[in-house]
Length: 338
Image (cartoon, rainbow, N blue to C red; front, side, top):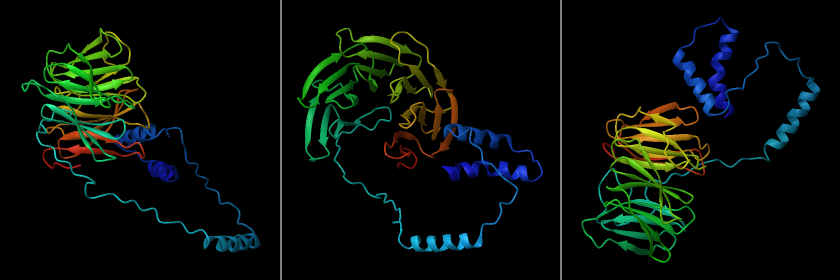
């Protein structure tokens, strides 16, 4: 971090030592945003022009002897990192629907992967390799459109093409509740404690309190096309929604009618991929479709666009690491890569 800060501020130090020069406005703005995002905007490097007095020769020689003795005994192991070039496991997925707008995979509590295949949901245990069918729709005209599990729980929410949302207990393979209300398919789901948010093809977002019979406690209407992505921030303060209308809305966590806190319209295609930065819950990453291809970073406190990266492919998904400050992105046309 110190090295990064030095690189950013080096030019300013050199300008103070030489003749003043007018800096590029865009460069200054980028430096300001970078330092602000790293929470280093008040840091300074002090430059002293006067030479320090030379050290006593005897003291210098003594330190050299001490340093030479210690150096050989403190060898540091090389810090190498292995990144796999091949998958750890490949699973068969017959009848997996090829649709950009659907959310058909989700990691669940206990290292369980939920997978939608046609009209059924299957559970794969990553520890044992076992596979179990959780449910299957009896009406072949309906399809499972989305799945999302409750963090640290065995409850799985299942969004259907008929507009219903089902809650299943994965341990008991039991249907707990069916919630109605949406007139069209439910392609996106996100949990915030006991509140389940669901996004529909109509553009409406419903908040469901799963503890009570009258479950629908709020409706958010701002998108004019299908809601492709929903994600609550790690601290539960904000909900990000993205749609086929190329728009991102950021909402508060209050229950009841409300307007978005921020609306971002920089993307030039549908936005499905959204992910909150786990280290700072006010930072949001979003990815655009084929006509946009950019991954953008937002500060939802200030509403600032912190920058964009052209991935050269349709952005289908974004996932932040919880171990290091990195993200992985999944892509469709034209390169179909990660």
